[in-house]
Image (cartoon, rainbow, N blue to C red; front, side, top):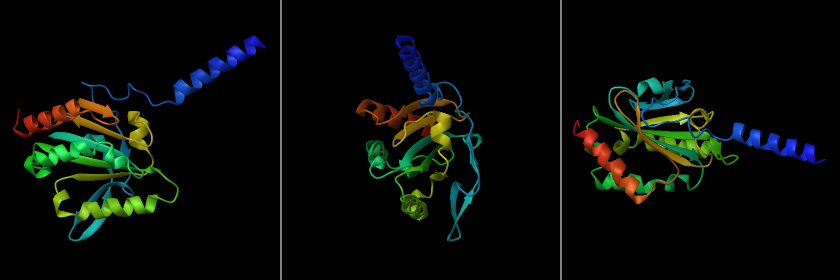
Length: 196
């Protein structure tokens, strides 16, 4: 009986390790693991008064610094890193960063949503995309938890990543940023916006 119990516990532990998000999926100084999203989700584009989706992949994160703001489509999750967005607004907003140097990518994981909430979350995301103040940002809809699975995020959460012009990870946090981390993120983005 003791042997079966020990085997059972070892099996449970191995399963929990295998099924938990990989903390090493994203590493500072390395490129993000590659993901691709199909055109039925992916990047949300607003042109000529019409919304449409295009395929999106991490290879598009080249040529400029990107701030990736990833959230689960759940009530209140957007509040986790709202202080970072407030700090960016206080620094002049996304418009203060030259588009050719810094771009914000908002990724909504619509697969990580409360039952029957997907339609509401998608509609709110599409509405936000249409807003003039968001014209410089990239909006990406993840309908299969591709980012969460490939990059090892916690479910029901928020993550923030900064990648450089070659797509190399400079900063990464799964969960709420501390006050010091927010200052660091804003300072780094401001420095990159000035071409440093």
